[in-house]
Length: 175
Image (cartoon, rainbow, N blue to C red; front, side, top):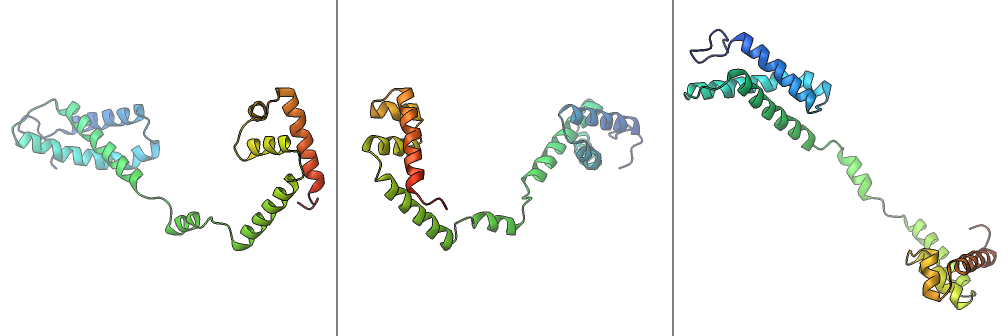
């Protein structure tokens, strides 16, 4: 666009420079990435100049520099949102994330381990078995699980340690 006159409905070079500097200051204040500003300000200003010229052609006269900054800022926000909305991961990455299910071998090993722990827990006294179940299956703290069994904090801690020691002793050390 020819930027020679202002009153006849065109934007001067001085007004464009002021608007560009104002936009850059505003984008820095709004914490836009510096590299993004350097790369995209010319596009945003070009689009703002076209929008502003359309307003002038429609007979709407406004503060040239201020309106250019506002229009360019809105364009920059739209550009950044569009850029951030684009997917950045490749399709292979997405398929890899979806395929995090355990292999049949891992599933068999986990199942065997659960059976061995369950068998070892069956040899524990009932209150200790309940305490471990509440702690590890129901995600309760030792203190909360101890209250459920009817023990205080220190008794629950002692019985928990003792139950784990008995459990470790009855399980194969290779686990």
